[in-house]
Image (cartoon, rainbow, N blue to C red):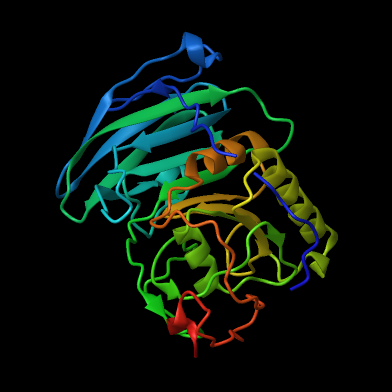
Length: 310
């Protein structure tokens, strides 16, 4: 391990997405202030098949959309799951989302239709919330979701569980986990990283093999360190992750946030809403130190999870 900094963090809020609509087309162009435009309607997610809703903008705008189907608080229950897509916005979700999904991006002028397809045979009463945002000084594109993967079996270190998603935030994992409050200069292995999430922590990651790959990678790491310090919770790690699809990601157990640029406000809200939601509320470091960027785990009886041993 070669930690660059230690990070310390606290717990708090959720997403402030508040102008809602469903069913027919909805004009979110006026007014700009969310408090002046608050509207809320329900969407029914059927137990089979799907439904559609549309959003219309008369002027190209940054818009946030959040779909909440009231997933259960129990992290071991999948809850209502769905796939969502919009051809006009080039949004195609190939993986199911479990009861919660949010997206922020630029909406061109016109009406944008979203298709919502039920997965898993569980229906739900959902709320769709949208809000037009003031123009950002930098890019503002991000999405977040809850994973339907409730698996949590301990696997041997070095094994490759078949249930991992493209950006896994839960699933079967290795018995050991990485030390908290550490910035890792090499990628923490997924099998450990998921165990950290199960313990209620957060993982801040950036799409690089190391911060030294480029100036952009160094800046991305430093932005995530600043974000972690601003959030204020010690049960976190920062790591490069060359497997993720976008430059930035933040993960809690069964919760994922992905963005091409770091919108600090939304990333912080996500982090505060996702910390300590794991299956096991454990803040201890591994009882035996090891380097989680490798598969070299000491097989001592002191290990809390002896099934880690290869």
